[in-house]
Image 1: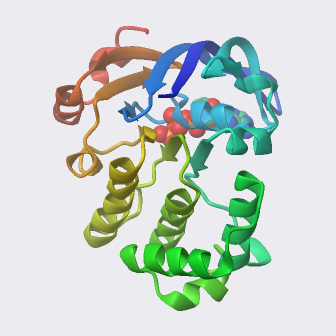
Image 2: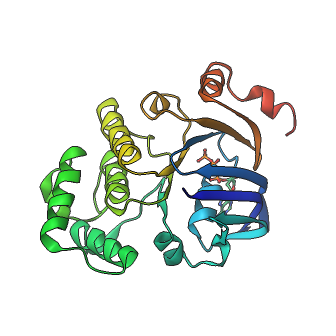
Length: 252
Ligand SMILES: Nc1ncnc2c1ncn2[C@@H]1O[C@H](COP(=O)(O)OP(=O)(O)OP(=O)(O)O)[C@@H](O)[C@H]1O
């Protein structure tokens, strides 16, 4: 069993007006096999947490710790974090012109495992995962995210996750922009990984609809760079019914 611990995390970002403090003391522990939903109003710092875990250079950790089984994640480079088992499905996946999906996936798998996967087994795994995600086979020959629709980009993020089989996956608004069918297909992908591995999931979302497919064990409400409230799945239902007014008025 693995544990991802976030302790008293403070993060600032460099802006045109100087550094801006975004995270102001986040504490969160995710164990293998658990699913944690992170909800909260726009601008409360959810993506900042995701990028800080992944190691985006724009985000400066000014205090606190991120530990993976006691190892200091903040000392690791981005690729070391990926090899250690951390995965981020991005809110806005970037285009990589000139690199096909097939090449990208195989290169990532090779970098993470330290050896190239056996071609025949790998090709079979990729086409099976693509089929399960209702992705046309020709996708493998397209350049990463180039001309992909919003839904196709999100499916591609989940395809990577299924094939790379991380210890911890952070899904940053993977549900946004998906139609109902795509939402179900993407959720099934996450659930397949949950059923066949001990993955711990941090699911950033604005909507409870994805939580009907991917059942969270815990829900955390982010407000103004901190966790303002924590609870079980019922908390998500309450937020949907009541909104965030009670937090915003309280000056948390
Ligand atoms: N590079 C940056 N330059 C300036 N401000 C930034 C930058 N990155 C983040 N911020 C600011 O930090 C705050 C938190 O942003 P973040 O994207 O983490 O919030 P969020 O909770 O994910 O929001 P949303 O729900 O709208 O996606 C916002 O006010 C945002 O404008």
